Length: 398
Image (cartoon, rainbow, N blue to C red; front, side):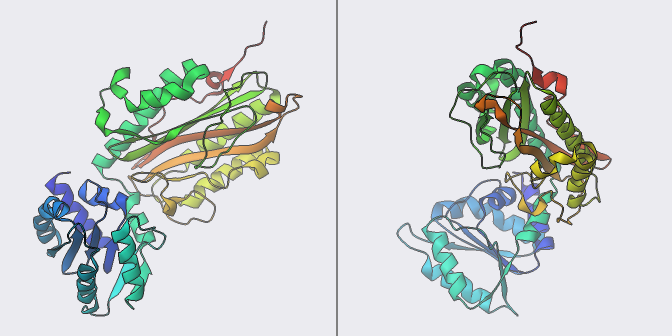
C-alpha cells in the first residue's frame, strides 16, 4: 500500500464514521493498512488514533503517524505491551481517554467475534465500561461496497484466474479435477498466467458436487464420492479465488445426457441470472436484482419458484460475503459505480423421472463476479462460458 492510499483511507474512515469507534476486523486492517495486524486494537476518535499492540507491530505502524496527521489532523498514540502482559493497563488508559470526550459513544462491529486473548480481554473491558456501544456494521458495509481502482484491479485478476482455471483446466478434465484444481489455483505461473504466486490464495477449497447430493449454501463442500456420469447426471463446480486478498467467485453446472425438464430448468436459470446481472446499474436497489430473477421464473417456469435460492448473491471484496449487500427482495441499499457483486443463484431439490437413485435428485447453480460501472456492469468472470451448448454433454451411443 502506498502512502497516498493510507491518506485516502483515513479520509474515508473519517467521512463515514464521525464517532469514536474500534477496529478489530482483519479485513478492515487490510483495507486500511495493507496488512493483517492480529492481536492489535485500533481505536479512532476525532482527535487521536490509539493502537494497542506489541513493540514489533508498533514499529511497523509508525508510518501511520504522518498519514493520520496530514489526512485528518489527528495524533497517533501507541500503547505498547510486553509479550507476557495482557494489556489491561493500556486498555484502561484508552477507555479513560474515551470517557473524557464529549458525549462518548463507542462504535464497534456487533457480530464480530474477538480472536485471541488480547481482543477477548478488550471485548470484556468494552462491555463493562459503561460506555454506550453502537453497531457500525452498516456504515462499514457502505464503505466497503465501492471499490477503488486498485481494488477493482485485484478483483479482476482474481476473476480472470478463476474463469481461466474453470475454462481451460476444469472443463477438459472433469474426471479428475478434485485433487488437481486446488494445486493449479495456488500456482498460477504453471498455467502461464502473469500473476504473482505469493498474491494468490483460495476463498474455499474447490467444490464439486454430483451423484444426487447437492448443497447450494456458500458454506458447502465437495461430495466425498467420485464425480458421477450417467444419463440425467448433473455436476456442479464452484471456484472461489483471491488476489491480494480480494475475492472473486464462479460457479457452473454441467449436464450429462440431460432430459427435457433438466434442459428447461437450466435455460430458465440462465435467463434469470442474466436478468439479475442486467439489473446491476448505478442507482438500482439490491432488491431489484432478486425481483428481476423472480419475474423471469414466474413467467417462464412458475413451478420452479419454490426451488429458487433465497437470494441472488451478495457483495464481494476483501470478505467473501459482504452481508450488507445481500441480493434479496428486502434489501433497499442502492448500487454505486465500483460496487462488486457475486451474482449467485440456483434451483435446489429438483427431481427427474430417472429410476437411478443417484440422478433422481439434482440442483443447478450459476455464479459470476460482476462490477457495477458508470454505464451498467462488467462480468469479470465472463471468460467461462455458461451457454447451454457448452455445458451440456452427451455420452449416448448414436
